[in-house]
Length: 372
Picture (tube, rainbow, N blue to C red):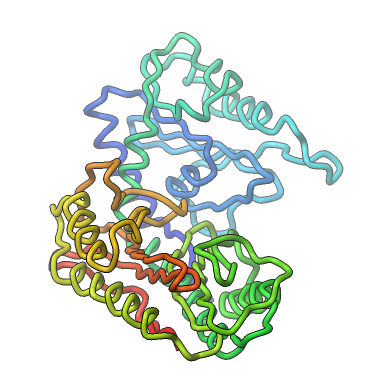
């Protein structure tokens, strides 16, 4: 039986076509990527951080994947696949990037004649760029990040699966939360829940597991009655990151102050679902939410409103006054309003994930929002 949770050849070809359109406008002979997330986006193959694969696409549509020889793809891949030696006698090499670049040079000798090549400026080193030393280099990284915003159907399957794991984690959290629970036990139980749900190890984890704080890693500390426990969870499944948050009352008896703040925050999601459409400026939504939450107390909300998710925990669109993004069809993004203060012990943050559609948004996290 085929695995439904992989990036498909069809999806990869769609992403490749979108990149080729941009390459034609930029008069590029090729784009070469070496970040693992970019390799996965282009070819469908996920590799953990121990490995250094490469991928390239020529203007004629040919695609090359340079992959660890013991990790060659098992699924249909729309690319020529060339192995490189990532390990010698089971020992991982520290010079994998040089080995992969040499395998690339031998497989595609025509690269030496390219005139204009797109690369990731922040990642492409001399092992790679030396292959086409006479070419003019262009920074393809901003465009690659932009193209990653539109999630194809195969990517959405992986994201929905990762997000589904957070739903299971919150169910476990509601079952076990109590005064005296160690934060490390909460962390361990939730990680185990996610692994059970996904049926395999996580490829990433996060974010906040500290009780009575606005965030932070789990500590060897026990929860106290009256505290609020912000759980901001970001398990990654085969390279794709979920990210959403719920806040729970440790003793199940939230105060009137806590309930008032919770109600104010919940109203933000109504605003989002009523107003977000393709073309809406993220700064405009941020400002509306900031004004709304300032009614509780100015300064109680003092961080970003959200961000895109995908092959990195924080992607575009940025719901943040430091960016001027617009919502676009196919964006998957988070909305995470929060209010903080000593009267809340120590605050509430709720976070939902959404998909931008032609009609508006689809809620991807239909999990209970209640404090208890």
